[in-house]
Image 1: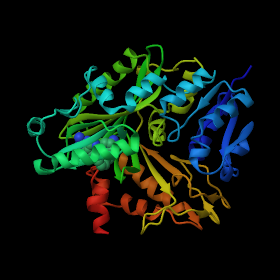
Image 2: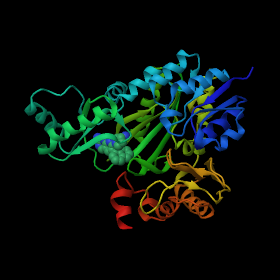
Image 3: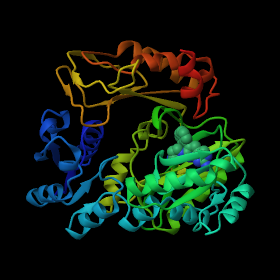
Image 4: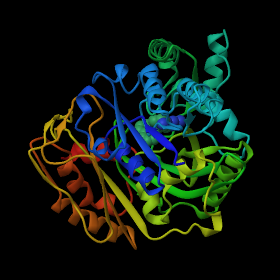
Length: 448
Ligand code: MV4
């Protein structure tokens, strides 16, 4: 009998998961909030269940409501996607305890990686380089603390152990701001996360953001799917991502990839995951591990031909990983542009009805989106409308293909960041792959 999956998400990733389920012959249950009744994937779902009002806390974050829907429809497993409950260890635990397989790593692994101090200590045991710093309890004596930080060397960054993705961190340029910045960061972390524990790292000033995609079957088999470069970002929101990361020291890279795979094997990692690194002066520094599918997974799929979402489902259903590492090959280059509903001037979200639209298409072009003409973009959720992905033999030809794809794509009725993409794709520094995580905010947008 065919298994049934509950898709506990919305938008493009819900549609992406639904398509993967259908290819695998799995039945689907899609849950949605009241305002989301017109979402595209609901039209293709075997069953749909409304789980509450638009506000996320009462629907997509409402665990009892989601578990009730799972019970009502008798699903076998729950697909969390990204955001919402995807990295909530308590949710993963409750799913499993209620008899629904959580599609992802076990709750202990999610919890371990959710605490950034624990995560750092853990990965460093597997020969993965971390940012130098201080993660122990702070000494009572302020002078002792200052000595510790002097030894790390300014500037440093104070991070909340419960933070991540850019939340709960502050830079300290010099000793006179150290104690006050630690106090503020602790206070904010306590308020935001209910955990005021902090750690200190050397601030890496101008790195690239490189990440490694891994896949584990939960039984000691694991592979990597290479790297992505996500340096083109603004306020911790990635704008453009690509695979593979180029101009990386090859010896260092191979060691990192091997260590990441080894870690997954050793801990019987189950599902897909991403290890995030800062990369500067040929050195990698681990910062965080994500235990979920990522928005930018398509660029990796486009250069490997490996269906990462299907792998998530197969692994959860105990069907294993179909390929060995030596059967994974990397083909050319892929780029993804995230099209967001936002005002290009104010950079504020721009909800509303899409009166008219046209997608991009053609050879080497992939389009992942849930939007359509007449669709109302609600203001309650993140502003991602569409992902346009191009693949070609080289980075430069993938960029050219993207420029042409963006010329074709149009959305009328709401504002989008499409003009920003068109500008970046024609920017010399981007074309030459010379940008870092600071480029968009500190140079590119300031010049405009
Ligand atoms: C850093 C850093 C520099 N040095 N840690 C931001 C998000 C979170 N994942 C960690 N982040 C950073 N950690 C040290 N020791 C700079 C950032 C950072 C960043 C990292 C990746 C992608 C974009 C970024 C934008 C600003 C800051």
